Length: 311
Image (spheres, rainbow, N blue to C red):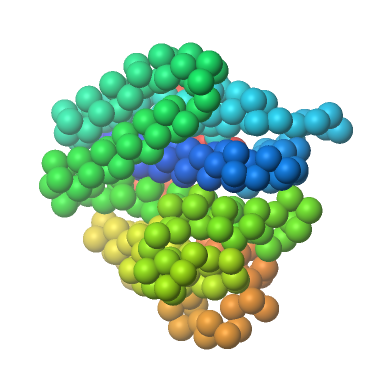
């Protein structure tokens, strides 16, 4: 294969990992918010919906009342936007199809069958609620990454998928925490944030109870063992970049390595005061690394239709 084909395959694999992780994270966030609204019918639905838009970096509808059906139409069912579940999974499928020689047959079948199942689940969700739809997305994302780990050799193809997943995971964790810390008007409570991160049970095992304190931020940023924490994901991303053969001072590894070191040695007692700036720096580091990865590994001209980035 020539270098251009290899570059395109590397890009497709990276975005496959990112898009599947984005769909999974969005499904978890929506499910957590929906359950909180169901448990507490007096909760402000408009504020909760605006919080969801803020987490995913989208503008909520003007001054009109915002409800969960609008949110689901925008963030779950919109196949035209890679910022939604359906759009992200569609983009992941197209990327995986363009890299069929690099992904395993089981990974491709997982994405393809998931995509074809979404239509029926979407129709059912409009009648009986979105819980089965969101559960399907979470299960299939877990299956896809499980198959990635169990059916791919630990070669560069695997590393690009895991690198994409790790960068997206840090970004989604930062988005959740940023709304909680910086946007008090629409902020989710700590238990909702834990549930949206898939971290409620892991947090309970570490701290002996469910989260209603700012220790949630410490867990989601600094825990070394929880796979969705920022520290764990940054460490994984850095390991992937190192194994991909970059020079030690490569522009892709530098921002990730600096933030990983900063988190690793951060005193937990100083976290609350440092949190707003830290979250901004984490997001900037991930963006800088993603741009450097593209420049280093995808050095060709012209956009690829299947790899356009969503919000």
